[in-house]
Length: 239
Image 1 (cartoon, rainbow, N blue to C red):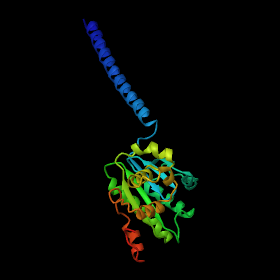
Image 2 (cartoon, rainbow, N blue to C red):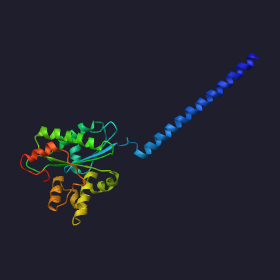
Image 3 (cartoon, rainbow, N blue to C red):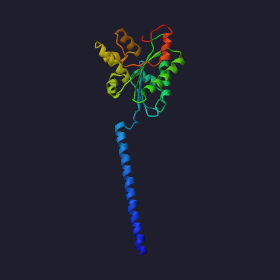
Image 4 (tube, one colour):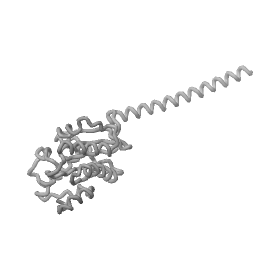
């Protein structure tokens, strides 16, 4: 009897162990399937939390994760490729990456003295978008003050950046600049996206002013400290 009881316990234990093994195996399979699905959706890259583009004439796109570290970088045009050459931005904290980009843009002469300096900053990502804009704007201002340069920083938020991405890439511009160009085209159908794609951001704003095209519905006014330096010289903030 004693021996039979011990065998029964062993059999029961073996069944319980088998159940645990099956549950562990099922959990591992679910985890594997989730990982495969994530890979298929993201192409093996970390899913982006925010999209940021910085346009002067170089158009540079950055994507970040939830820790605000850069996970992907795209040069929208040849000028941007010059700017990005030798800049190790992937893995960097966003503000550091932005400062490096602006510093290189100045170094290569895309921003400088004796010319109109306009920067278009575009952010997409929903929650926290406005706060992120302010942080990036502050990073840009830090570089400009250090270089003793004057510039206007124009910011816009895009709710659905992916709807612009494909057309923007085909036009050789960032999604942010493409959104601005589309605004001009709606107001002035006499020009084409191809004609405006290679135009500096400063010249886009000058053209819009000449045609009485307002961007007030898509642009927000951050960068007050930098813009105030223009005001000290008697220029209007809306100029």
